[in-house]
Image (tube, rainbow, N blue to C red; front, side, top):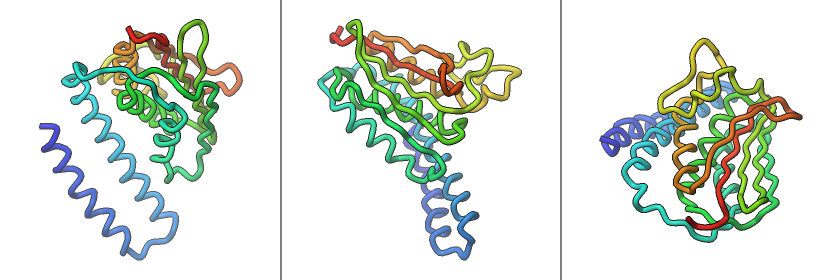
Length: 206
C-alpha cells in the first residue's frame, strides 16, 4: 500500500514540477506553487515513514554518528524556505544513535517548526548527565494548551488552532526516541517563546 501510495502521488507531483518549470508565472506565484509541492512531498514522506517505522523497528541498531553532518543534510532539504533561518548549534559533534531514524526525527521536527516560525529555527545538540539532547525550537507562537496529546498518532489536538499541523510528526519522533531508550520533552522556549521539542536519549547503547 505504501509503495502504491508513493507512486500514485509522486507521479503527478513530478508532472507538476515539470509544468511549473515551463510555465510563464511571476516569481511570487512560482515560489508559492513550489512551496505547496514541497509540503505535499514532505507530508507524503512523513506518512510513508510512519508505515515503515512500525514494520522495520527490528532493524534498529545504534552506531557512532557525525551529528553535525546529519543535521546539515536535513536542513538542506528546506532550501526553498528562503524566508526562514535555520541556525544549528552543535556542542556535541558525534553521538551514538541510529542515524537513519534520527534523521527522520530531525526532519519531522523541522517540518513542524517551519509551520510556525516567524523567522528563525534553532537546532541544538548537547550532552550532559550521560544523555544526548537534540532540541529544535523556533520564534513562533509556542505550543498549544493541550500539547501533550500531540504525541498520540494522528492527533492534532482540539479547540486550538496551534495544534493543527503537528499531527503525526511528533508521534514519529516519540517512537524514535523510545527505540533509543529516550523520551520527548515538549515546552516553550524561555527566550523566543516558540515551541521547543527536545529528543533526549542515553549515551550508552541499551
